[in-house]
Image (cartoon, rainbow, N blue to C red; front, side, top):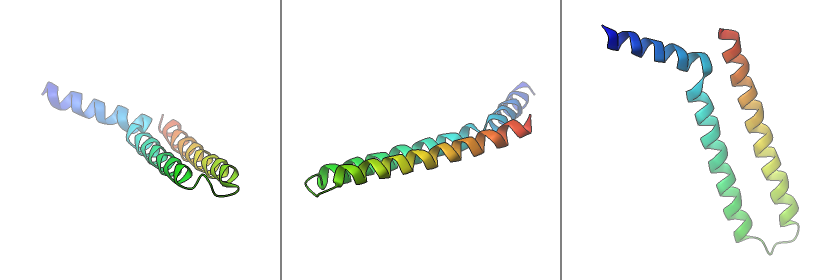
Length: 79
């Protein structure tokens, strides 16, 4: 059946490139950044808040990049 063949091919391509895992990493990062934005706007009168905000953003992005690279490495090992 052509439908089953196409489904299995799509499944293999998804597995090969880890689209689902990368999407989850992206969404988690986006939600964490939104949360930090709200915290920053709420507490912007607190001393050192800009420095702390930047540090937290950098940490979130660094973690996200590490997760992305790990997922990409796993994907490339499947090839």
